[in-house]
Length: 532
Image 1 (tube, rainbow, N blue to C red):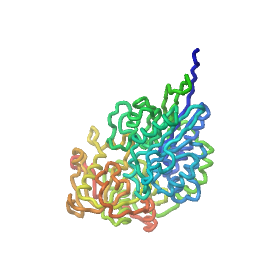
Image 2: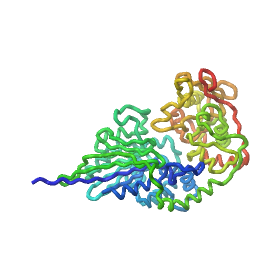
Image 3: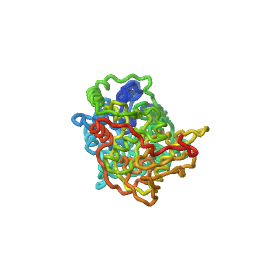
Image 4: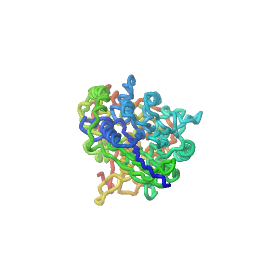
């Protein structure tokens, strides 16, 4: 007698790197912006209506990234975090800790986890003393009908390189691949799951198809290794790099990564066949669903309205004036020669820290700069991260090496004009890894080979001594060696300034009332010895 085969399909949905985006607006000017969880929610609703069974996982970097997120973490602690409230109401199945979940400190994160009606899965972030997962369970099993789905949560292990040590005190970050080997085996053998889903807040250092490196093999993004070394993973949800990925990796693992800010929803359709008493996976189809044709979910808009009203009132609060021009009209121009906005940020850092040398960055190409009348909105539109400051004791050689790393931001086009090195654009834009310095004088000639581009470097009118020691202030991400600045990672810390830089900027303008735009012209980018 032939047993009739049975077939089922279920959907695995993923959001990742939403970064506090709910409404489809840009907070710098409140203009429409094609992002946000409100529009993603509409897609999720449609998928629920047509799916035989569905699991939705948020892959991390949820609670940081917009003024809404910042205001809620800093001034709205008397009510539930809006991002958590959204996920509760929309009935997410689980969430993963991203690196930016730690930015506001342990009290905020603990409250977020406590208020969540869903588990935060974290298999490789452990308590240093007990060795147990510090945020509850590393895994969960969800039954979709009679199909058992095992879900494992992992996070990039590079967080200690970037985060304020006080925010991760008592935590141990262990290798994601080795952790996956242990728990995937457990899910298959002990929990008898039919489908293994690993949600990893990390990305890929190798090409999905060829295995060739696409960035430095640092271990920050272990997605390819997870597919290659843990063959029992059926679906790998990724993030962190803000890439758009939908494909099949090593060992037939279905892989997705849905970009950032809620522009896309990741979806993997899994088809099962049941011939005896167990379901078998027979097909997997990964895809990305764009929010482009979706309207904002009205229920989400209603939930977020009280938060939004509070943050808009805060953003429009006037704090002072700028005398002169600190606007950014051309991001490339801002990065080619000394600029009053960048010098202003460096001056704030130097005054707050007492250090004679400072570096900072234009974090992305959306920063508008500062006009004549400054509001809170203007500051947070330019300084978008909750960074704090750290003063390091560096050698002259460290500073020169850092400037060479900065100079690698540039390449030349066929006409010799400066363009952005593709390594700073792919797999995701990292404009924030190009630093500009105040307190030293330097010139970078990008017509010279990488590593030989610093052609002038002085401090107080004299050549910088390679063996000399200098105090330099920078943000905590850079001071930890983030962005390829490993020369900073083990240097002596002179002092920490725990106040966030955006708050320091606000206080500086409030105190001065009028800030004059000025520029020392202490640095420039050259081509063949001439300023561009």
